[in-house]
Structure formats: structure tokens, C-alpha cells
Amino acid sequence: QVQLVESGGGLVQPGGSLRLSCAASGSISSIRTMAWYRQAPGKQRELVARIISGGSTDYPDSVKGRFTISRDNAKNTVYLQMNSLKPEDTAVYYCNTVAKPDDRLLFDTYWGQGTQVTVSS
Image (cartoon, rainbow, N blue to C red; front, top):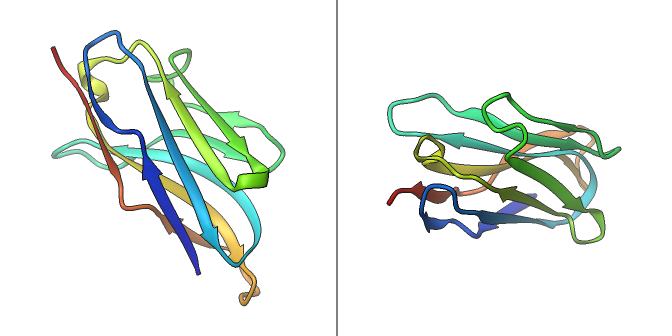
């Protein structure tokens, strides 16, 4: 199985920065994508940033230019650098990966437990 552990959430003032980390562990054969999603109260979970195995990245317009996703392949870890944070960025942020464990033939989707990010003065 694949486990994801996030860290780095917290309370920050508008305009501030936070860096989230997510480490994937377990007997992993291959990772196709790693991504961050967020879910605010009363809203659907939405994609924040995604990075594929080749290094290409994908962001929605709401965070483009403010958030940067990066990945350390050797450590199976993904990072989300969040700058110029706004109150509307407040949400629980979830790490996501599409990966294949050693004992499986197919890729599957895995989620972390989530980390709270609160942007408030």
C-alpha cells in the first residue's frame, strides 16, 4: 500500500506564505502523478496543483502565479509553496498520488489525511 503524510499547514496572515510537504511511503513501484487538492467548508474538493512524472505542472487560474508545486523523486515527496495567500485559500489541503505499489499490477489513487491552512488577520 501507499501512505501519504502531509505537513506544513497552519495559520498565516493575508499576503503571507506557507510551504506544504507530502511524503509517500510504502512499497512503491512507480508514481505517475502527485498533486494537491483543497476543500473549503461547504465546497467541493478542487485541484490546486499537479505534477506528473516528467515534471510538467498544472494549476487552476485561482492559484497560478502564487503557488508552485515541486517534487523530489528520490524522496517520493511533493511540496507546495504558497505565496501571496488570500483568505479564500483557507481550506483543508490534501495530498494525492496516482501510484502503483509493488504488489499490484495497476495504478491506483491515494489520499493523505489533510492539513488545515487558514489565512486570516
